[in-house]
Structure formats: structure tokens, C-alpha cells
Length: 184
Length: 210
Image 1: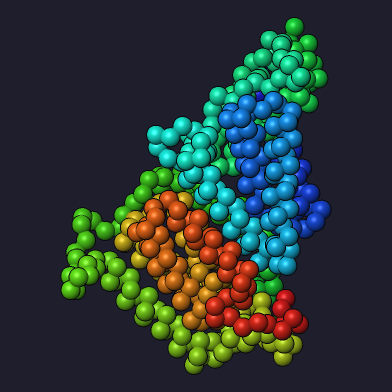
Image 2: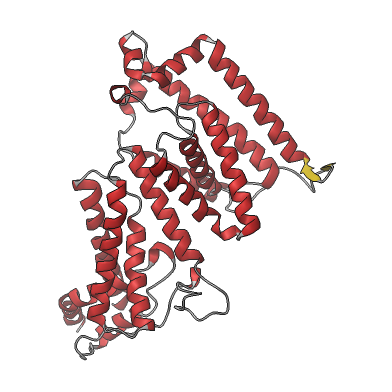
């Protein structure tokens, strides 16, 4: 059952990504390849701020979303003057730059999350705390299992999902309870 | 007739070709394995020219590419079909208005480009080996070279490729091999913003663009 829950959570997470990508590609007709880098920026911001600065869940969540949106806007303004193939190439350049930056911002020996080893390269950041909302912990056997999965949810590059994962956990309360109810 | 049929069957979505690419790569990997293979058996011979060390594979690659580029240039300049290709590059719409079949020429160009890519991939396979996933990196580098060199020009992509190769080697020398991609795409972004038509390209008139 917890595997199905895990699948449902990831399904919802990538559903959000697909929806946001559809906003750019489908509604606006901008074929962007740089979307994964904003995905990664949000998750890295959340992970770094909670790991190194000890921020709470909600402010870190807000900061992740804001930084991701602001950087996306900052890239989109100069990219505005390109059309067609050139827009695709600009977004590809942004994506490759960001991936390379996240993948290579690492020094062996330095502690993960410090300035020399910001992203820990392909190994990713681990040990992100479980979310607490105003000091409330989430307790339910199935939900606790679900939250344990959050701990290894930032990998390198475009795979980092902690931000959306944590956002989803909040939204998934109801679903989790329904699933739990079915199981018993 | 045939041309019309092929073109009408071809999906107009930009995601079709990446999907095709992924399917082909995975099929090749499943059929012949995922590991790197080398065409050459054993170590390569080495030629010493003063302080420069060149392997035979590199020399073969350089010679074949010079011959191919020279032949291609001559063909573009002096053959009837080459003239038609240059006309398409110059102003495809006007060329179509004069009664030539632009779609047929474009299909032909696509096939010719595939054949030339095959030759270069053979050279690479002889030099450093190949694996099913190596194609995308090479093609991305080629796209970067074309854009910084300038589309629709003959010498632009060549100079762009040489520039890119030298810069990437310098990055390995002065920084580290892992920053190659970052520097490559930083150059691409810089070039797109400062000179979108490329180093050797000329600005097109708006109505000639499609």
C-alpha cells in the first residue's frame, strides 16, 4: 500500500510539473527546454534553506517558489526578443548551464551545503527535515511512512523534488486518509 | 508524388524527432549493448612533428574532413543542384514562386546531411569509440557551432566548430573538464544575445524568413 501511495505522490508531483509546462508550451506556445532548471532551483533553495539556515517548512516553501519564479522571469525577459528556433536554443542554453552548475558545484571533502560544496554534485543533499507546520508534526502511520520518503528527495540536476514533494504532502492529507481508510 | 506523400505523412510536431531519437537509441542499446565500442584494434600510431604529437586517427579525420568540405564547397559553387540549394538558403519563398520544388530540395538536403553526419561519426568512432547515447552531445555541439558561426553561411559553422573545439580544450587545460558544457553554453548564450545572426551571418530581411 505504501508503494501505491508513493506512486500516487510522485504522480501528483509530476502532474504539477506537467501542468506548469503546459502553461508555457501549450497555452503560450513557447517551446521551452529550461523548465527542469526551475524545478531544480526551487528544490535546491528549499533544501539549502532548511538544511543550513534551519528555516521552517512554510517560509522555506515560499522562498523556494519565489526564487524559482523570479529567476524564471529574469531569464524570460531577455529571451523575449527571440522567436522560434532561437527561443528553443536560448532555453536549451539556460538548461545546460543550470544543469552543469548544479552538477559541478561541489568540492570533495567540503561539507554539503557550504559555499564550496553547494549542491554536493551528483550525490545530492540528504537529511532534509520532515515538514512541521506551526510546530505541528504530521502523525499517522501511513503518512509518517510517506514523509520518510521525503528525506531522500533531492537528487542532483533536474530530479530534485523536495519543494513540490513537500507541497504535495500538504495537499495529499485528504488522499492519504482516504487510502488509509481503504486499507483498514 | 512520392515527395508529397512523405511530407504529408511526417508529423508536424517538434517533439516527433526527439521521440524518434529516443526510440532508436534505446533499440540500438538493447540490441547491441550499451557499452563503448572502438573500431580500431590496439593502440594508434603516433606522428611527431616537432613538439606536436598527432595520432594517425586524428590525421585521418583532419584529411577526410578537409577533402569532404572542399568537395562540398565545389559542389555547392559549381553544380546545378548546389545552385538550387544556395537559392533555397537565400530566399526559399521566392525560389518556390519561380516554380522549383522546395520540399524536394529540403528532403534531399536532409538525406545529404545524414550521410555527412555518418562520415563524421565513422571518424569519431575510429578515433575515440562510440556508444548509443553519444550522438546527442555531438549534435548539440554541432548546433552550438552552427549558431555561433552563423546559419546559411558556408565558412561560419566551420569557424564556429574550430572556435568551440579550441575553447573547450582551453577550458580543460585552465579549469577542469567538468566545466566544458557550462562554458560551451555560456558562449552560446552570449553569442545569441550579442550577435544572433552568428559571426559570419548576415541579417535577413523579415519577409525572407519563414
